[in-house]
Image: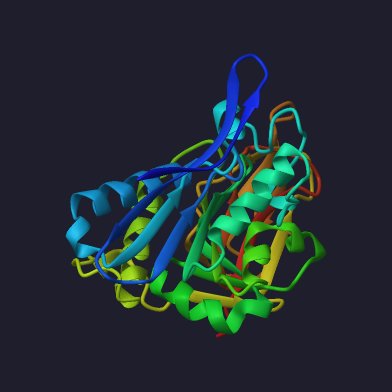
Length: 311
């Protein structure tokens, strides 16, 4: 059943509309919400929503409870392939929990939070930006670690990053929901403006595995591609590698690989001079969960993130 969360008229016969697909069956009272499209240039969540809706609709008798799918929290951004809300110059994930009688964007944020409140789980799906490629991961605020890490483990994706609280996070959807007692996991993967089918399919499988653990899904789940023991990163265990020179970054390395201390991740080169300006080398043994995707770099650009593993 398609329901409208908020609708408003726009100039030139256009309309701002946020909708959800409500899939319900059985007597179960548990409710899972899949949300994405907060940033219009992050597209992996579109495939995840499609696959979850398709599988449930084709096997509705296996569902005992309610799954709500919100594929476009920022529909104007998706339509125009812009990260923020066009014409408002706003990052939607920095205005939650919104204002009931505020601007259109603030009203939308308020209605979204009100609609999601009370769910047994909200999964907020993001992609990386155009510059970085991320391995599938769940990001959790340290304040919510005890509640959310066990849920994240059931998704079976590569990496769980428990990070320290930051002021900017207080305006995100996840923080707004978790602060009201509605558990919200943030999944991130891939690269901006693209869809990685393998990553999406793995997350879809993880969602059904999590729903099975919650007693909402009685269908078989092929867990062969899921991680039984994903890396859980806490505190200062992440190494940030920044460019030491400006140029073109060349690499064959992919996120999701193990790297050794001293291993070459890539090179920054000068096309004009025909020489290597800088070698990007791993400072430790660990799990490479972020690597630069966009080849043009400047001094200080983020090149990679590595989860340090102590042997």
